Length: 215
Image 1 (cartoon, rainbow, N blue to C red):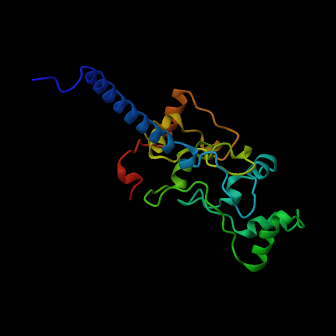
Image 2 (tube, rainbow, N blue to C red; image 1 turned 90 degrees about the horizontal axis):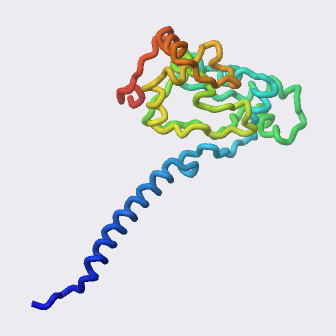
């Protein structure tokens, strides 16, 4: 019986199989890169706001404490968005004619709140409690980055589950002294002895069960 396929088809078949594997691997790698890119995670992306509020100016230059605006961060799961009255505590006296602050003045006059765009917004199926992290010595800067250097706010971390689990599995790499929790200029990793001492002192448990965050 005569040979149906030319011997060169063996080479073509091997190249095709190799090419298919290579292409499939490349597609998977590309998808993984896209999922972790700023296009999806919004890391480093400045969100449009009704007023271009500068943390660099208010925190870094003026020296406002995080709790002045985010009043419920120590007692609630939600850090809190400041009402317009908080802004007007200062801006009823400062920059009273600034066009940039007109939306703030209008909000205060009409009683209609400003609609801020949340930068750090976890999915609805995730439960996150600010207060417990604060009381366990996890500084604001660990999640939000150096806000004292941000002229406009952006997301510093992906907020992916892996990022959360990295901390939950090894809290000693992220814990700090409670006295420095609200100091955005401090982001140091303690030596293992000091870090583990704080883990014991604050009774930090490495909670990784699903129910911890998905309730």
